[in-house]
Amino acid sequence: MLTGFRLRLFKRKHVFPADHRSPPYKVLQKLGKADETKDQMFEMYVQNFALQVSAANRLQKELKRYIECVKSMSTATRGLHEALESIYEQEWDGYGNISSTRETSDLLWDDYQNRLVEQVFNPLLSYQSRFPEVKRRIEKRGRKLIDFDSARHALETSKNKKDEAKAAKAQEHFDMAKTSYEDINNELLDELPNLYDSRIPFYASTFQLVCSAEGVFHTEIGKTRLHLNSIMDKLYEEAGKGTYNVSRSNIDAGMHAGMLPTSPTSIGSEDSNNKMFSMAATPSKTMEVPKPDPPQYTAYDDDDDDNDDDSQHYQVPPHHAVQEDLDEGEYQHPPPARPNTNQTDVTSNQNGGIPPGVLYKVVAVHDYAQKDDDELSFSKGDVILVVNYDDPEDEEDGWLMGRIENTDSKGIFPENFTQRLKS
Picture 1 (cartoon, one colour):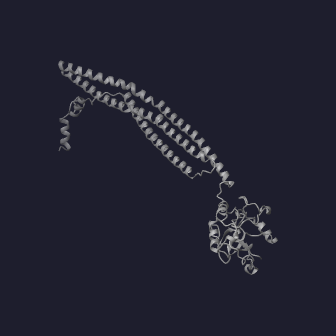
Picture 2: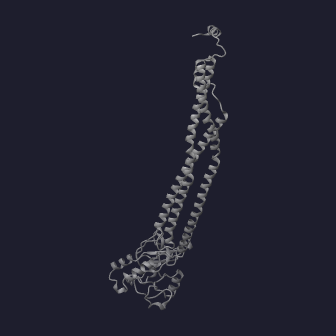
């Protein structure tokens, strides 16, 4: 290894001529990669083409994701409509329109997807399909340029050697390489800028079609949603009127007409009595009193005692009506399923004192099992302290709020299952 003074001496003795080229440079010249032809305009076109390809690839990726989301939303909407169709009962208003609304919605979603695929996504694929061929020709043009530079260098070398045969052959090879290069180069110089300029109308057309398809879809699907909303509004109004309420009195009426005995004499035992009341549904908070006996009175018209049609059911009188009738001694509670004279007259010994906050006391004449969490369960003979509702708006005719005496059990209960204690 040469170091220090010897290295500097070696450099002075081995000074190469100015036109001398190292072997690697000569190899590059022969390969056409040294002193290569530069075309800045073409390089700019190639750079623009690369940006165009990248933008189209991103648009294709995002559009594909968009269509997949539309498809997923279509599937989810279809499932939601099918759920609505399965829970919407036949007697509800607008039942026949629920199925047609779902079918219309499915058609709109399918049409929207088809528009996006056929009018937007497929044309984008066609637009992108031109890029591989252009890219292949750009690469071919690069190879032709190398051949051209190599032939040019070979021609210059042959002229320096003054060999006419080699010079003629080099000239012929140079002419062929030049022609091939210039042909493909000129084609690309015309094609690349035109291709790059085409991106603007293509993008404008693409997003016009997307917006048009989306606008048509949302307009039509909005109409179906408004129609469905009107159906729900009507259903809500009818439900508020109690049109579709499952009235326990209707169930009781049917069981009363077809299953329950029509005379107290047909009640044979306490077991049959309990069975009868377990079969009859408990009256709802706004319904009529179940009574196995034939009509003896009506709460509103005493002249209808002889009317046996289905319209005559005993409705629970309002709370103030019960109080007035008891004061006047005219109101009669429905007799229990099994007559028991021991409970028809309740003495003041059972009543005892009225605790603070208690309106009055009642005694259960039938067993009652709660149907809801806010109801009170009790057994026959239990004394119940009647109190005010926590919220006056919750008051319902025929139902009282109370708690069983000497317990913490509190809730609402049907008034017709009890009898007021005399004070």
